[in-house]
Amino acid sequence: MGCITKTGLLILNFAIFAAGVAVVALASMIIHKDGSYGDMLSDGVFTLPIIILIAGLIIVIIGFLGCCGAAQENSCMLRTYGFIVAVLLIAEVTLGILLLVYPDKAENYIKKGMTDVFMKYGGEDEALNESIDQFQHDLECCGVSNYTDWNSYSYGTSGNVADSCCREVVENCGFGQALLPAAQAGNFIYTKGCFNAIKEDLQGETIGLCVVLFIMAIVQVMAVTCACGLASKSGSSHYA
Image 1 (cartoon, one colour):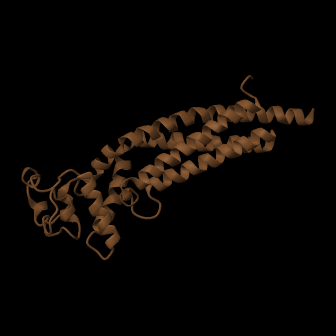
Image 2 (cartoon, one colour; image 1 turned 90 degrees about the horizontal axis):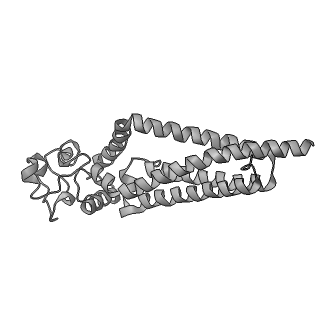
Image 3 (cartoon, one colour; image 1 turned 180 degrees about the vertical axis):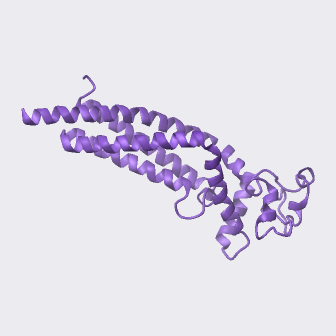
């Protein structure tokens, strides 16, 4: 079995380590992009980008431990490493299948988190208000699905949208705009929803992340095979 060598496993784990670093970098870009994506993608501490970032850090650690196990040729460490990578691979494949089978549920989860954030607009949290204003202004969007969503937010129950939805921002420019037809409101405010605006703005990062994860899955399969083979070889050598 030609691939079952210390050098081969070290190379594979370096690839896993590099892929983990790439995932961390991409997740960090999403978190810091426009300074407000972390707040918008979900409500609470464990936002979607944060989860991706944590997963990337775990991959980095696993790659590092795999390199150590291969260098020491410790059969117990290698088998444990192989088991952890196999579990991680199964989890990744399962999550990927679920996202493909239930894309609407994934989108609804993100939209619900965004809606929870928008519902708090106009309250005492000035930092959140400014974050939403900056977010809408920069992406030229209004509301989660579209501008009429503001009719269901506490701030917009009188048909108002945030002034940051306006094409030309002046005080009270958003008053009554949520009640107007799209063709008429579009002359004064942005009518596109912020969820679709995020999807468009992050398209490049999303594609890059998918490519990295696909390559990493292939590398993980090879790493598990090599780790188990090297562990058996090391174990046989130990008892020889």
